[in-house]
Length: 430
Image (cartoon, rainbow, N blue to C red; front, side, top):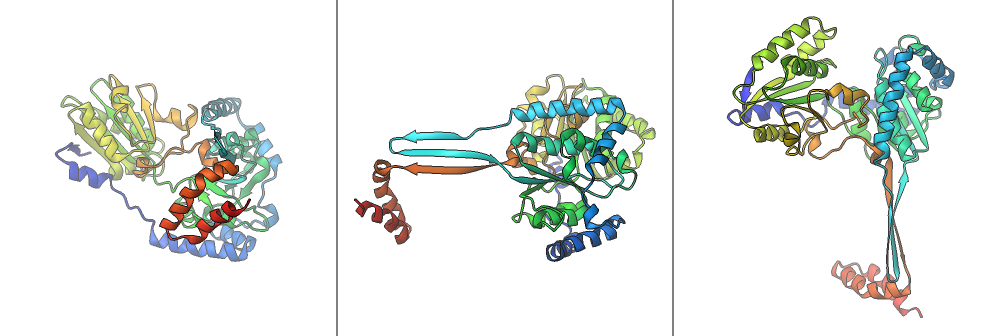
């Protein structure tokens, strides 16, 4: 891959990092039609699109998966897979329990002010499926909702193409205790069904979880009818390395991110004139030869692979802040010194033995992260995403009397006479 130099090639780097903020108009037009049909015709439209897009004819009464199927899926898992899922659950739950926050009460003479924190009542989790299986998606999206205290969690996943008892996310649902609310529905029609509710599918307050372009478009178009976590784009990693980093580690970590779909962005920032990009390139070529998903990885490297040379650690941090990556690995002698200078990032992985896949599966922090530069203003999925705050105000007569004159002044300043009168009517009361 061509090596860009920072800051000399800043314009080329910015262009490489840029992305379209809007969705594909063709996809959004299709999705808008799906949303309208599901809103009008409910289960009938949901069944129609399931047959059209997923190739499965499922009666409305069969949309909901029998919990016995999930229990069977758990029993069929190899013991090492069960142990890995249980290990991951423990780490994810322990990390997210530290995120729980309480409201507060502020008392002053004549007034009591409170912020009250409550969980959402019903949340929808979208888990990609069909021929693919992502039990980690189930864990990362369901566990924070459970920790927050969400009363009802609905899970939507496309109809399984193979044996349902072999579908690992069903096993994960059994482990988490949410197997009684799994629905065989995918794509934009699933998001619409959860947003509006149908005879068979409950209406939810929020939809979280990744999906394809149609799922992303549905979430974008339905935001406001429901809350969403984010509109996720293709995954990405930015690795900052110096000449102490092993080329085989760097190459392996770049390929780990590049193998998803072929649309990923993988960036290597090398510090100093001595950094050996050629050695990394040779390792990439060697590891690609035996990579099972080399077609996807090669495409990602070809279309979204970027090598950037910087002179100093500070310049490496500047490039990272410019990209605002979903994942950032730092493979340098003192990684924390660079990490402290990067504000725009979803998750940071420090040192040679913290590769990004550890965060994907078992470390505990959430792997649902902002993509496409949105780490400038978005955060990882967490417990807060499933909580809402309400404000509670209570004034007695003494507190009211102290505030009344100020309220009247401000109301009249804004020309809202009825606001002022709502105060005066109480002043006149004895």
